[in-house]
Length: 338
Image (cartoon, rainbow, N blue to C red):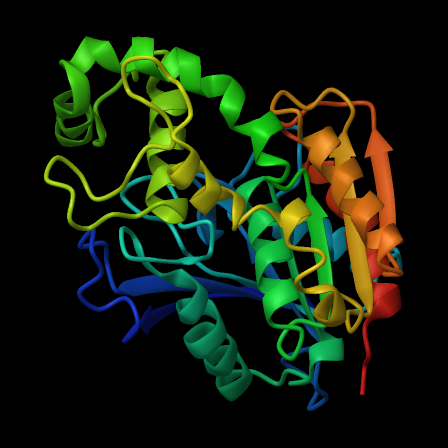
């Protein structure tokens, strides 16, 4: 028996007429374990969500010296490190690089897309165990952020959560890049017009991308998610800092902080207590300082009497898919199989 990965085309009602005119027809990849086709039993489901500038299909990328997700899951199942499970890989990519899995007036309602469309769609088309205790949300980086955001808000949907190097403690992971942005964006014009020019001229398939591309698109993407402003003429979001000086604009920065996981533990503590698994990890050499956010998040969980597993490892932010060996093992042990 072999596993299969099905590629489904899902037409979204939620994403119809989204602000960025991104596609409403999206590919959803579904990993079906080896015994799925020859049995009638139901399986728990993991929702594996991508990091910034990523989407589900990228989990299937082939590399000479590392496994894609199908190869990894097959090995873990074969060696009995994990039990069989369905793994769902949706596409929540946007023109600005990602959605952070939130509802935004600048990008679209991607939280609703996952919760109201994709989860019911999967449960209707596959033999899942449609219960929170048999449904996990997992991701790395912005996907890790999405896992925290969605699980603490929807414990009735996701009963298990895994975050690898997830965005948190925003003052440490985002703020350090603001001063560079105001210099980098000047390459594309003056003031707010420069951002409009960047969006028009740089968000395309032209290569090579300038060195500053990722920092600029990252701040654009986060601003669109955390501080949307459809009324702005040049673009449809607000920056949390002055475009000339990089000085913080408190009222906008505070809008960002309303999305910061470390600041949401108290608000959602009752929801977090419902989760069967909270697994948090991060490399001690993370280039975005996310090890600090992971520590603060877990400290707040501890102070609120919320059970969690926190691990650190000697690595940075990139190419850490090998950590799925650890997290999927914990998921397998905590899943309900009935």
